[in-house]
View 1 (spheres, protein in one colour):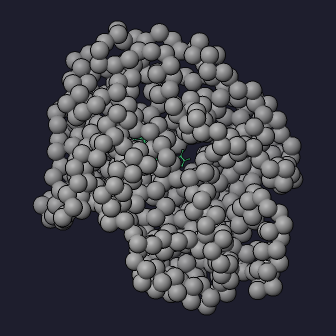
View 2 (cartoon, rainbow, N blue to C red):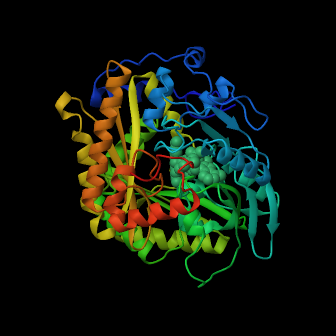
Length: 532
Ligand SMILES: Cc1cc2nc3c(=O)[nH]c(=O)nc-3n(C[C@H](O)[C@H](O)[C@H](O)COP(=O)(O)OP(=O)(O)OC[C@H]3O[C@@H](n4cnc5c(N)ncnc54)[C@H](O)[C@@H]3O)c2cc1C
């Protein structure tokens, strides 16, 4: 079973205690810290109020089910779960097994004045699935029993999935037939294909496979006004595309029950590689040249100098890191070096050609290749980073991220502005913040930026939340000021809603509101999310 107050599974006993070296590194930057006390499951359960819904065969009103669907995975959610002070709870949780059952739930919600929150993997980091406590009873519709590959059209390479299939379920069922979707968000272990569509997700290998919007070919949606089937076409000029209504509307138009996705045969080969550049500027110039030359890489990630140093310190194996750093320094990549990780995926010939092109271009910008070990390490730990929050927490530190995307012309200034806004956000308390950034989804037009920040927990939960609120506001405002989108991949939910008008404009927000009202005039679907 999924952990009720953290990442991963109860059975998964991976140990993420910080190494002595990593702890000393953080203490040196931020000062020593003390962990806040965790509430037990029993203590949290004791605070779940009675459901406002009468028991019914369509759903469960069990307190533990309701607690497990009350919060997602944002830092405020983490603080709520760890303190046992969760705020509003859903009144019931349903586990439908078919589109018809979802249709029946929608009918019931319509007839009984109930709000509905579609729930995929609950991995939202922006408050997407949290009840708002606005008066009406709330039904959380958990899609995880609809997890099957329902149909595979090999000729057209379209797979139809129940919308609750998680990343591993999608890939294992496709692999049996020799196919892959290739969508690997870092939350892949727990997030679902319906959630990816509803929140416009982006996977680590989007350079090869595309973002979810390129994969989403059609599907079935149960709305409060009835069922909508979106047929698949390779392309169409027949007016606005209905798929766009559902991509990124965060459960506000209906419950996606089936997703028809574009899949591809499993690649013959795949490998990941690391190159270091002496400076950030050289790294930036190299990755822009590589992506604009359309070199067929499957992923690229350029860490700035602070992230590079942090990753090397936290990696453990101090001896090996010291040898590597000496070698890099001899080749011109000393302090201030930046790490470029990239992947090649495809046929043997495609991988060979892409690898050679990328390395050649990197060399022209001072890049130093490091063999295959660091690439293998990245591949091995690509879904493990979320567990680090546990180790940091036990040492008294909190971690969160902010992300955006901008045109290349704005990227260099934006990295500095966002990182420094976050790093300075607790200056009034004389608290240091350790912030670092990478580019991880690169396009010929521009790039996503992803800033991670670590700070000390305060003496209490409310004070720690207040620190987070200052950091979030500073980072979000810096993103808006830099001309970036408020989210490249995490979505809007509640935490980003106030920043949406800056990029959509008044008329744009009115148009989105009108669209929501068409499907849901009484605002029963996931109210309070997406729009300010
Ligand atoms: C550690 C971590 C790493 C992450 N890394 C990435 C990343 O690399 N890339 C990325 O894109 N995101 C990432 N995320 C964010 C999150 O995983 C994505 O937003 C993901 O798409 C959410 O999927 P989910 O199934 O968990 O949806 P949920 O969190 O359950 O729901 C998200 C939203 O979608 C709606 N929804 C869910 N299922 C349906 C459905 N069937 N029909 C209608 N609406 C639905 C919900 O109502 C809600 O509004 C990360 C999150 C965490 C915690």
